[in-house]
Length: 451
Image 1: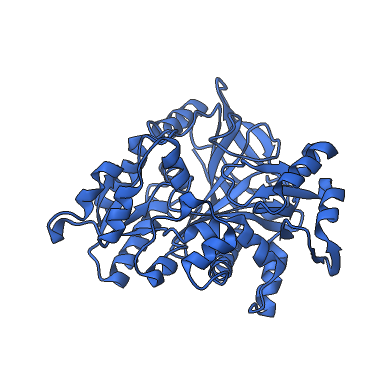
Image 2 (image 1 turned 90 degrees about the vertical axis):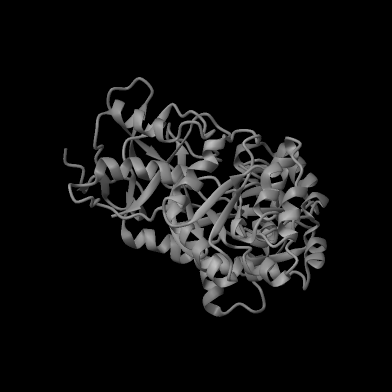
């Protein structure tokens, strides 16, 4: 079956281009392969699945990663400048007490590898890409999912020589390269500890073992450690230690199910370097976006232009004056009077939680939400209307794909500054809004590739 791209069949915003990949097998075959690859990982069941990878022009693909890497570095500098020390930054951000743990003894290494694992979230607005937030954590969603979906697409779309009509890096291959670089920089053995727990809600053991199996078959030595097993990564003969690794968990997720983080602290204290480091929490906090959007004194004209072009107007919510399109405004009255233009977000909200889209609530609810958020570590951000593209989707029970216009949220995976694949998610019915695959049963996900 010819699976190459069909020029001139794309619809929607021009940024997405005019090329689409045809389904390369029957609907039932595609459905079975996709579900098989993500079996037993904890990934939610999806009633609507993609029929082919989503293809965008190479220039658009390159733009996403070029801007992602540049903004991540600006975000890192912004977060670190809020205080000379970790204690200063904790105070500046008003971080919850439970986040004051799991620090490396060496503050330089702690800061150096804070941005090792990042996934921005962006949409295509009327004028192109707009970065809505930055997920900075070793526990990013989308990595195993993108690896698995890409494996299916490569199998279906490759020719007899293994060539595909598109390009996309493998997330786990790029992450493996990140660990090779990390071991070389720190002069440590390339033995990788993947630290997490299958007791976290929505995660299964195979989710972690997919990653360690990949590393073990591609030149690294890796092992998955539950917290109670982690002492085996350092309390052993030197040649058996796992001195580098991935912190594939968040502190709130572990605390929610009663898991103790003490074994992780012991591993850190005994020489294990787990990325992203705890300093990543400052980059992850949306307050950092507010600071960056407002501009920092050290930024060049080029950096300011980049931020103005790709970051929606974002401000830390407080009773103060601020700049709005070249004019000074009283922020709080402006926010209360312009509900339909804005989105309210908590600094450390996750998975679309603690987000209020002004145009989706009435004025009373908006005023109440804003009143509770003032001075509580929240931001307001200009609403971006997501643009659409046409994709082929396979619904449960359908014997053939159906074309639907969707408004995708793009999630470029960036590991150690390297492009590692483009995760995307969307509502299968074509609606727009807060797309959380784990939090909404009508959400779907796919891989974007470069044509």
